[in-house]
Image (cartoon, rainbow, N blue to C red; front, side, top):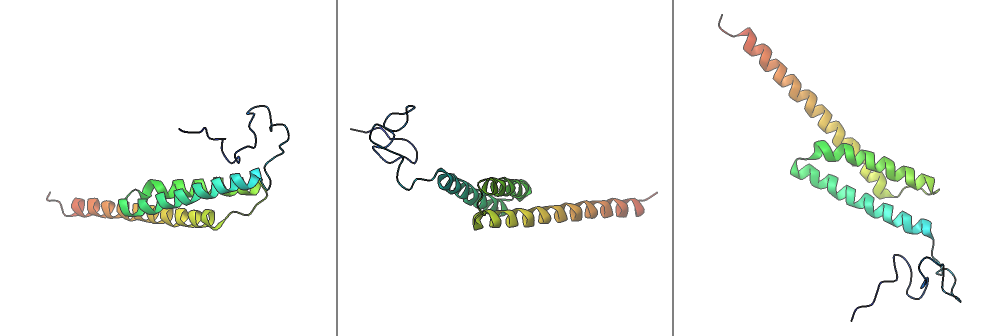
Length: 129
């Protein structure tokens, strides 16, 4: 026999009347702060993005995971600042890894274009006429 879940972040017995507020005789859950629940969700999302960006280094998709990680970390930091909280270390680490990855990809792209340009110039200079 399975029992229905009372919902996210709600202890069993609290908020038994969904859509109608707490059940008679019950107040809000003691010690429940919706900002802290949202902060935990954001920190978990930042941790997941950190893992995705790290895997992107090993798989070869860092050209897309780096800029996306940088963008997502900015969004997470903005959400934390909106709630009046300092971003946790996961967000800071994600931003740092995103910036480093984006710089490596940019430098690699410039070096690749320079190598191809030198090859074209070299082939054109030594081509038989």
